[in-house]
Image (tube, rainbow, N blue to C red; front, side):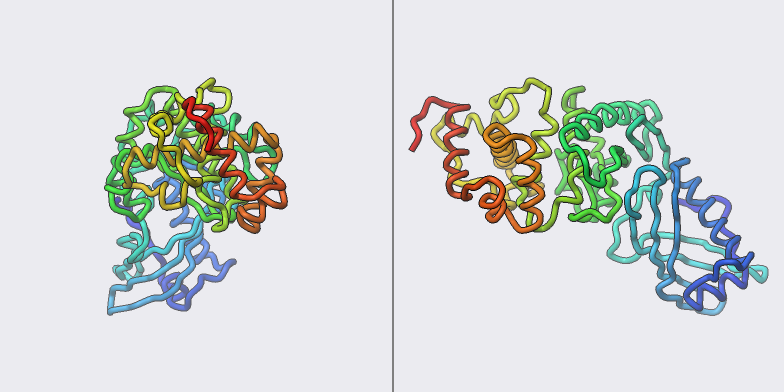
Length: 368
Protein backbone atom coordinates (compact mmCIF):
# COMPACT_ATOMS: atom_id res chain seq x y z
CA UNK A 1 0.00 0.00 0.00
CA UNK A 2 1.06 3.63 -0.20
CA UNK A 3 3.08 5.18 2.59
CA UNK A 4 0.89 7.83 4.27
CA UNK A 5 2.72 10.95 5.20
CA UNK A 6 6.15 9.61 4.03
CA UNK A 7 8.68 8.79 6.69
CA UNK A 8 11.32 11.41 7.40
CA UNK A 9 14.72 9.96 8.18
CA UNK A 10 17.45 12.11 9.71
CA UNK A 11 20.92 12.26 8.12
CA UNK A 12 22.46 10.69 11.21
CA UNK A 13 19.99 7.81 10.98
CA UNK A 14 20.83 7.26 7.30
CA UNK A 15 24.50 7.05 8.21
CA UNK A 16 23.65 4.53 10.91
CA UNK A 17 21.72 2.48 8.35
CA UNK A 18 24.76 2.40 6.09
CA UNK A 19 26.81 1.20 9.03
CA UNK A 20 24.33 -1.61 9.57
CA UNK A 21 22.78 -0.50 12.86
CA UNK A 22 21.37 2.46 14.69
CA UNK A 23 22.75 2.73 18.24
CA UNK A 24 20.25 2.76 21.07
CA UNK A 25 20.34 5.88 23.19
CA UNK A 26 20.96 8.21 20.21
CA UNK A 27 17.95 10.59 20.17
CA UNK A 28 17.90 10.88 16.37
CA UNK A 29 18.16 7.13 15.83
CA UNK A 30 15.54 6.42 18.47
CA UNK A 31 13.29 8.98 16.82
CA UNK A 32 13.55 7.10 13.54
CA UNK A 33 12.58 3.88 15.29
CA UNK A 34 9.59 5.64 16.77
CA UNK A 35 8.56 7.06 13.38
CA UNK A 36 8.77 3.65 11.70
CA UNK A 37 6.90 1.94 14.54
CA UNK A 38 4.20 4.62 14.55
CA UNK A 39 3.70 4.19 10.81
CA UNK A 40 3.28 0.45 11.10
CA UNK A 41 1.00 0.70 14.10
CA UNK A 42 -1.26 2.68 11.78
CA UNK A 43 -0.68 0.26 8.90
CA UNK A 44 -1.76 -2.67 11.08
CA UNK A 45 -5.05 -1.06 11.93
CA UNK A 46 -4.39 -0.67 15.62
CA UNK A 47 -3.17 -4.23 16.20
CA UNK A 48 -1.17 -4.35 19.45
CA UNK A 49 2.56 -4.47 18.74
CA UNK A 50 4.94 -5.86 21.33
CA UNK A 51 7.93 -5.17 19.07
CA UNK A 52 8.82 -3.99 15.57
CA UNK A 53 12.49 -4.03 14.53
CA UNK A 54 14.38 -3.62 11.26
CA UNK A 55 17.87 -5.15 11.02
CA UNK A 56 19.79 -3.80 8.04
CA UNK A 57 21.38 -6.48 5.88
CA UNK A 58 22.76 -4.39 2.99
CA UNK A 59 22.69 -0.83 1.67
CA UNK A 60 23.24 0.31 -1.93
CA UNK A 61 23.60 4.07 -2.50
CA UNK A 62 23.38 5.82 -5.84
CA UNK A 63 23.78 9.54 -5.33
CA UNK A 64 20.63 10.84 -3.71
CA UNK A 65 18.92 7.46 -3.61
CA UNK A 66 19.50 4.30 -1.60
CA UNK A 67 18.07 0.79 -1.43
CA UNK A 68 18.16 -1.06 1.87
CA UNK A 69 17.75 -4.80 2.36
CA UNK A 70 16.44 -5.38 5.86
CA UNK A 71 15.06 -8.10 8.08
CA UNK A 72 11.82 -7.16 9.78
CA UNK A 73 10.99 -8.85 13.06
CA UNK A 74 7.74 -8.11 14.86
CA UNK A 75 5.42 -9.62 17.46
CA UNK A 76 1.79 -8.95 18.31
CA UNK A 77 1.39 -8.21 21.99
CA UNK A 78 -0.60 -10.88 23.82
CA UNK A 79 -0.76 -13.20 20.81
CA UNK A 80 2.73 -14.16 19.59
CA UNK A 81 4.84 -16.50 21.70
CA UNK A 82 7.69 -15.79 19.27
CA UNK A 83 8.17 -13.03 16.69
CA UNK A 84 7.47 -13.21 12.97
CA UNK A 85 10.41 -12.52 10.67
CA UNK A 86 10.52 -11.54 7.00
CA UNK A 87 12.90 -9.72 4.65
CA UNK A 88 11.99 -6.33 3.18
CA UNK A 89 13.34 -3.87 0.61
CA UNK A 90 13.23 -0.18 1.57
CA UNK A 91 13.79 2.67 -0.89
CA UNK A 92 15.16 5.99 0.36
CA UNK A 93 15.56 9.38 -1.30
CA UNK A 94 17.58 12.35 -0.02
CA UNK A 95 15.77 15.69 -0.13
CA UNK A 96 16.29 18.93 1.74
CA UNK A 97 19.29 17.53 3.57
CA UNK A 98 17.38 14.57 4.95
CA UNK A 99 16.62 10.98 3.92
CA UNK A 100 13.01 9.96 3.28
CA UNK A 101 11.72 6.41 3.03
CA UNK A 102 9.73 6.28 -0.22
CA UNK A 103 8.98 2.58 -0.43
CA UNK A 104 8.78 -0.57 1.68
CA UNK A 105 7.99 -3.89 0.00
CA UNK A 106 8.78 -7.60 0.28
CA UNK A 107 12.31 -8.60 -0.69
CA UNK A 108 12.64 -10.73 -3.80
CA UNK A 109 11.27 -14.22 -3.21
CA UNK A 110 9.51 -13.21 0.00
CA UNK A 111 5.72 -13.41 0.39
CA UNK A 112 3.63 -10.29 0.78
CA UNK A 113 2.53 -9.11 4.21
CA UNK A 114 -1.09 -8.20 4.87
CA UNK A 115 -0.34 -4.47 5.10
CA UNK A 116 1.20 -4.59 1.61
CA UNK A 117 -2.30 -5.26 0.25
CA UNK A 118 -4.08 -2.22 1.66
CA UNK A 119 -5.16 -0.57 4.90
CA UNK A 120 -5.52 -3.16 7.64
CA UNK A 121 -8.56 -3.26 9.91
CA UNK A 122 -8.19 -4.99 13.29
CA UNK A 123 -10.98 -6.57 15.34
CA UNK A 124 -10.23 -8.11 18.74
CA UNK A 125 -12.28 -10.98 20.10
CA UNK A 126 -12.10 -12.51 23.54
CA UNK A 127 -9.54 -15.12 22.35
CA UNK A 128 -8.72 -13.87 18.87
CA UNK A 129 -7.27 -11.03 16.83
CA UNK A 130 -8.63 -10.72 13.29
CA UNK A 131 -6.76 -8.56 10.78
CA UNK A 132 -8.41 -7.94 7.42
CA UNK A 133 -8.02 -5.95 4.22
CA UNK A 134 -10.96 -4.89 2.08
CA UNK A 135 -13.68 -6.25 4.38
CA UNK A 136 -16.25 -4.49 6.58
CA UNK A 137 -15.76 -4.59 10.32
CA UNK A 138 -18.96 -6.65 10.67
CA UNK A 139 -17.49 -9.53 8.66
CA UNK A 140 -14.25 -9.47 10.64
CA UNK A 141 -16.34 -9.49 13.81
CA UNK A 142 -18.10 -12.64 12.62
CA UNK A 143 -14.72 -14.29 12.02
CA UNK A 144 -13.60 -13.25 15.51
CA UNK A 145 -16.78 -14.73 17.03
CA UNK A 146 -16.16 -18.05 15.26
CA UNK A 147 -12.53 -18.05 16.40
CA UNK A 148 -13.63 -17.27 19.95
CA UNK A 149 -15.90 -20.33 19.88
CA UNK A 150 -13.08 -22.48 18.54
CA UNK A 151 -10.26 -21.49 20.89
CA UNK A 152 -11.73 -22.80 24.19
CA UNK A 153 -12.66 -26.11 22.54
CA UNK A 154 -9.08 -26.50 21.34
CA UNK A 155 -7.69 -25.57 24.76
CA UNK A 156 -9.86 -28.24 26.40
CA UNK A 157 -8.67 -30.89 23.95
CA UNK A 158 -4.98 -29.91 24.07
CA UNK A 159 -4.15 -28.64 27.59
CA UNK A 160 -0.70 -27.51 28.54
CA UNK A 161 2.15 -26.58 26.27
CA UNK A 162 3.35 -23.12 25.24
CA UNK A 163 0.18 -22.15 23.34
CA UNK A 164 -1.30 -18.91 24.72
CA UNK A 165 -4.89 -19.95 24.04
CA UNK A 166 -5.36 -17.17 21.49
CA UNK A 167 -5.27 -17.10 17.69
CA UNK A 168 -4.45 -14.51 15.02
CA UNK A 169 -6.57 -14.71 11.87
CA UNK A 170 -5.73 -12.90 8.62
CA UNK A 171 -8.54 -12.21 6.17
CA UNK A 172 -7.11 -10.93 2.85
CA UNK A 173 -9.34 -9.47 0.20
CA UNK A 174 -9.42 -12.39 -2.22
CA UNK A 175 -8.10 -15.84 -3.07
CA UNK A 176 -5.29 -14.20 -5.03
CA UNK A 177 -4.37 -12.04 -2.07
CA UNK A 178 -4.38 -15.10 0.19
CA UNK A 179 -2.00 -16.91 -2.17
CA UNK A 180 0.31 -13.86 -2.21
CA UNK A 181 0.57 -14.00 1.59
CA UNK A 182 1.59 -17.65 1.30
CA UNK A 183 3.95 -17.16 -1.65
CA UNK A 184 1.98 -19.59 -3.82
CA UNK A 185 -0.25 -19.62 -6.89
CA UNK A 186 -3.99 -19.12 -6.31
CA UNK A 187 -4.87 -22.48 -7.88
CA UNK A 188 -3.18 -24.25 -4.97
CA UNK A 189 -5.79 -22.91 -2.52
CA UNK A 190 -8.97 -22.77 -4.56
CA UNK A 191 -11.69 -24.35 -2.44
CA UNK A 192 -9.48 -24.34 0.69
CA UNK A 193 -11.21 -22.29 3.38
CA UNK A 194 -8.13 -21.58 5.53
CA UNK A 195 -4.56 -22.63 6.23
CA UNK A 196 -2.14 -22.11 9.11
CA UNK A 197 1.34 -20.67 8.67
CA UNK A 198 4.30 -21.15 10.98
CA UNK A 199 7.33 -23.35 11.45
CA UNK A 200 7.00 -26.87 12.76
CA UNK A 201 8.41 -27.29 16.23
CA UNK A 202 7.13 -23.89 17.35
CA UNK A 203 9.27 -20.80 17.73
CA UNK A 204 7.33 -18.74 15.21
CA UNK A 205 4.30 -16.48 15.03
CA UNK A 206 1.46 -18.65 13.72
CA UNK A 207 -1.26 -17.15 11.57
CA UNK A 208 -4.53 -18.62 10.34
CA UNK A 209 -5.01 -17.28 6.81
CA UNK A 210 -8.60 -17.35 5.53
CA UNK A 211 -9.61 -17.74 1.89
CA UNK A 212 -12.56 -15.31 1.88
CA UNK A 213 -14.05 -16.80 -1.29
CA UNK A 214 -14.32 -20.31 0.15
CA UNK A 215 -15.05 -19.20 3.71
CA UNK A 216 -18.11 -17.18 2.79
CA UNK A 217 -19.69 -20.28 1.19
CA UNK A 218 -19.63 -22.13 4.53
CA UNK A 219 -22.44 -22.21 7.07
CA UNK A 220 -22.03 -21.51 10.77
CA UNK A 221 -20.91 -25.07 11.52
CA UNK A 222 -18.38 -25.06 8.68
CA UNK A 223 -16.87 -21.74 9.72
CA UNK A 224 -16.46 -22.78 13.34
CA UNK A 225 -15.10 -26.18 12.27
CA UNK A 226 -12.51 -24.64 9.95
CA UNK A 227 -11.29 -22.20 12.59
CA UNK A 228 -11.18 -24.93 15.25
CA UNK A 229 -9.15 -27.17 12.92
CA UNK A 230 -6.66 -24.41 12.13
CA UNK A 231 -6.48 -23.28 15.75
CA UNK A 232 -5.65 -26.87 16.69
CA UNK A 233 -2.63 -26.61 14.39
CA UNK A 234 -1.58 -23.45 16.23
CA UNK A 235 -2.00 -25.15 19.61
CA UNK A 236 -0.02 -28.26 18.63
CA UNK A 237 2.69 -26.44 16.66
CA UNK A 238 5.38 -26.84 19.32
CA UNK A 239 4.90 -30.62 19.29
CA UNK A 240 4.76 -30.87 15.50
CA UNK A 241 7.98 -31.51 13.57
CA UNK A 242 9.04 -32.79 10.18
CA UNK A 243 8.81 -36.29 11.68
CA UNK A 244 5.06 -35.92 12.37
CA UNK A 245 3.09 -37.63 9.59
CA UNK A 246 0.31 -35.54 8.10
CA UNK A 247 -2.30 -38.19 8.86
CA UNK A 248 -1.56 -37.57 12.54
CA UNK A 249 -1.43 -33.76 12.48
CA UNK A 250 -4.47 -33.38 10.22
CA UNK A 251 -6.35 -36.18 11.93
CA UNK A 252 -5.83 -34.73 15.39
CA UNK A 253 -6.90 -31.28 14.19
CA UNK A 254 -10.10 -32.77 12.75
CA UNK A 255 -10.74 -34.77 15.91
CA UNK A 256 -10.45 -31.63 18.02
CA UNK A 257 -12.72 -29.71 15.63
CA UNK A 258 -15.37 -32.46 15.64
CA UNK A 259 -15.42 -32.88 19.43
CA UNK A 260 -18.83 -32.24 20.87
CA UNK A 261 -20.50 -31.73 17.50
CA UNK A 262 -22.29 -35.10 17.43
CA UNK A 263 -21.10 -35.74 13.87
CA UNK A 264 -21.02 -39.44 12.95
CA UNK A 265 -18.21 -41.00 10.93
CA UNK A 266 -20.42 -41.15 7.84
CA UNK A 267 -21.42 -37.49 8.25
CA UNK A 268 -17.85 -36.33 8.78
CA UNK A 269 -16.23 -38.50 6.11
CA UNK A 270 -18.82 -39.08 3.35
CA UNK A 271 -16.28 -39.60 0.54
CA UNK A 272 -14.48 -42.26 2.56
CA UNK A 273 -17.79 -43.89 3.49
CA UNK A 274 -18.79 -44.19 -0.18
CA UNK A 275 -15.41 -45.68 -1.05
CA UNK A 276 -15.50 -48.31 1.71
CA UNK A 277 -19.10 -49.23 0.94
CA UNK A 278 -18.03 -49.81 -2.65
CA UNK A 279 -15.44 -52.29 -1.42
CA UNK A 280 -12.45 -49.94 -1.68
CA UNK A 281 -11.11 -49.85 1.87
CA UNK A 282 -7.76 -48.02 1.80
CA UNK A 283 -4.79 -50.35 2.13
CA UNK A 284 -2.66 -47.98 4.19
CA UNK A 285 -2.89 -44.89 6.33
CA UNK A 286 -2.94 -41.69 4.23
CA UNK A 287 0.47 -40.65 2.93
CA UNK A 288 1.63 -37.05 3.18
CA UNK A 289 1.13 -36.58 -0.56
CA UNK A 290 -2.56 -37.48 -0.21
CA UNK A 291 -3.20 -34.15 1.52
CA UNK A 292 -1.78 -31.99 -1.27
CA UNK A 293 -3.68 -28.80 -2.03
CA UNK A 294 -4.87 -28.74 -5.61
CA UNK A 295 -5.23 -32.53 -5.80
CA UNK A 296 -8.38 -34.52 -6.51
CA UNK A 297 -10.90 -33.14 -3.99
CA UNK A 298 -12.50 -36.56 -3.37
CA UNK A 299 -9.11 -38.16 -2.72
CA UNK A 300 -8.10 -35.35 -0.37
CA UNK A 301 -11.42 -35.70 1.46
CA UNK A 302 -10.83 -39.46 1.87
CA UNK A 303 -7.38 -38.76 3.29
CA UNK A 304 -8.75 -36.32 5.86
CA UNK A 305 -11.55 -38.69 6.80
CA UNK A 306 -9.17 -41.60 7.22
CA UNK A 307 -6.77 -39.49 9.31
CA UNK A 308 -9.58 -38.31 11.58
CA UNK A 309 -10.79 -41.86 12.19
CA UNK A 310 -7.26 -43.09 12.84
CA UNK A 311 -6.96 -40.55 15.66
CA UNK A 312 -10.44 -41.48 16.91
CA UNK A 313 -9.33 -45.12 17.03
CA UNK A 314 -6.30 -44.24 19.14
CA UNK A 315 -8.42 -42.16 21.51
CA UNK A 316 -11.09 -44.87 21.81
CA UNK A 317 -8.67 -47.73 22.38
CA UNK A 318 -5.89 -46.04 24.39
CA UNK A 319 -7.47 -42.79 25.63
CA UNK A 320 -7.22 -39.12 24.76
CA UNK A 321 -4.17 -38.50 26.95
CA UNK A 322 -2.34 -41.36 25.29
CA UNK A 323 -3.21 -39.88 21.88
CA UNK A 324 -1.56 -36.62 22.96
CA UNK A 325 1.47 -38.57 24.23
CA UNK A 326 1.63 -40.44 20.92
CA UNK A 327 1.49 -37.14 19.01
CA UNK A 328 4.36 -35.65 20.98
CA UNK A 329 6.44 -38.83 20.71
CA UNK A 330 5.90 -39.02 16.96
CA UNK A 331 7.19 -35.48 16.64
CA UNK A 332 10.31 -36.37 18.60
CA UNK A 333 11.24 -39.69 17.04
CA UNK A 334 8.76 -40.59 14.30
CA UNK A 335 5.50 -42.54 14.23
CA UNK A 336 6.98 -46.04 14.05
CA UNK A 337 8.86 -45.63 17.31
CA UNK A 338 5.89 -43.85 18.90
CA UNK A 339 3.64 -46.81 18.04
CA UNK A 340 6.07 -49.06 19.90
CA UNK A 341 6.91 -46.85 22.85
CA UNK A 342 3.52 -45.26 23.53
CA UNK A 343 0.91 -47.68 22.19
CA UNK A 344 2.88 -50.95 22.44
CA UNK A 345 1.92 -51.87 18.88
CA UNK A 346 3.30 -51.61 15.35
CA UNK A 347 2.21 -49.51 12.37
CA UNK A 348 1.15 -52.71 10.61
CA UNK A 349 -1.00 -53.91 13.50
CA UNK A 350 -2.55 -50.48 13.88
CA UNK A 351 -3.29 -50.23 10.16
CA UNK A 352 -5.14 -53.57 10.26
CA UNK A 353 -7.19 -52.36 13.23
CA UNK A 354 -7.91 -49.07 11.45
CA UNK A 355 -9.08 -50.84 8.28
CA UNK A 356 -11.38 -53.04 10.36
CA UNK A 357 -12.72 -49.90 12.06
CA UNK A 358 -13.50 -48.32 8.69
CA UNK A 359 -15.42 -51.39 7.56
CA UNK A 360 -17.34 -51.49 10.84
CA UNK A 361 -18.24 -47.82 10.54
CA UNK A 362 -19.17 -47.78 6.88
CA UNK A 363 -20.19 -51.23 5.69
CA UNK A 364 -21.05 -54.79 6.59
CA UNK A 365 -18.17 -56.17 4.54
CA UNK A 366 -16.27 -58.92 6.41
CA UNK A 367 -12.74 -58.30 7.67
CA UNK A 368 -9.93 -59.68 5.57
